[in-house]
Amino acid sequence: MKGSSVADDLIIHGGRVVFPEGIIPADIAVSGGVITAVAAAGSLTGGRRRIDATGLHVFPGIIDPHVHLQTFADPFDVNVLTETRNAAIGGVTTMIPMLLNREDASLSFLEYFPWARQAVEEKSLIDSAFSAVVGTSGQIDELPQFANECGVCSYKFYMAYTQDEAAVFGIIAVDDAQFLRGLETVRDIGWPARAMVHAENMSIIHPLKAKYIADGRRDLRAWTDARPDVAEEEATRRAIWYTKETGSRLYIVHMTIGRGVEWVRQARADGVDVIAETCPHYLVLTKDDDDKVGRLAKVNPPLRDAHSAELLWAGLRSGDVTCLGSDHSTVVPKPDKLKESIWDAVPGFPGMGMLLPIMLSEGYHKGRISLEQLSAVLTRNNAQTYGLYPRKGAIMVGSDADFALVDLDEEREVTPEYMRSAADWGLYDGWKVQGWPVMTIVRGETVMEHGQITADPGHGSYLPRYPAG
Image (cartoon, rainbow, N blue to C red):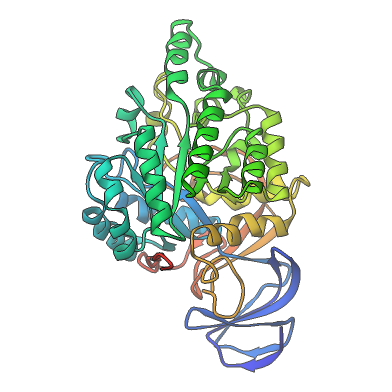
């Protein structure tokens, strides 16, 4: 870092910058939406606009790699408008939502993509890349063209959602032959192309669900008992093995099982390119929290036990669990989420805006993870995994000027009104959470300040990720 006198668009001074390698008092200069200097504290003068970050920690803008904006009540473009407000409240500056046409999940991505890109560029407050939900052989065939023409290089395959569950989500699950073809296609496209997998063995789950329904079970734990660890364990290990056999690249979304940390560690030691992601709700809630959250916490895969949560925390600290995402979904009114029982309640919940605050409050403040480790798993690692680094996920010269300015001491009670999702509820409503972003900056423009949205829809841009070759 070096000091200078600059005439940039923006100077952020007085803050402590949170790098994965350490926390350093520093000034930051921005021009044209890009970082132009990272210098010793107090050394940057000038600037058309100056932000005094004294007492604050400056994180790179948070990247949420796991977002669903096409589910249930509103279409994708409406959810882009409302849910990026929620993202900005929580310091998220880049999201990677899944492309899925719920009315016809077999639709060509090449046909769906232009409309989705337009939705982001006209209605989003934050920047966006895309992943795509793959359900047909025809979609697998078009992935190379999709990657090279549209810059979409991450593809989600569901080893889940068959029978009644497929109808709920409009998702087409793949069989093993399709998944293998998908892995081979990803391998051949080249980096940063990566297969994502929702790993659950439905042949284990369906009969258990029928049994517990017949037994009259209605508690939150019944949902976990019907989707036991072994169902996720078997599918996860099978996906890792297929990846090893094909020489492909795998991303395990929302890993819930603690033992999975060791499998991922071992697979990577054996040369398999596998990345594990988990989500905050698997770290701070368990299947025994019916009295705390009830049916609001129904999710797939389900909440596990406290031991799995501790192993996942340990995996984040060790780096074996590389990424964190929210799995933001189910933007519906509360009655439509809860329904009549655990069996017909809709899985999932909004979560983008709570990704950083929950990890600060339940992670950092409770001694489970350091700020540097949070900077890694919420920014750098997500950017590197998805081919966005160093444009995103970094505070360095040449990177986009995306920041979350955090007050570690600020405490507030979570309310739907503050979080600004279109949903009139949230999983953490009523929680007292310590550690909040007080300003969110996307490419040099402040989009949120002290809970108020300060930018217009359409500030966000689309981020293509073309194959390296």
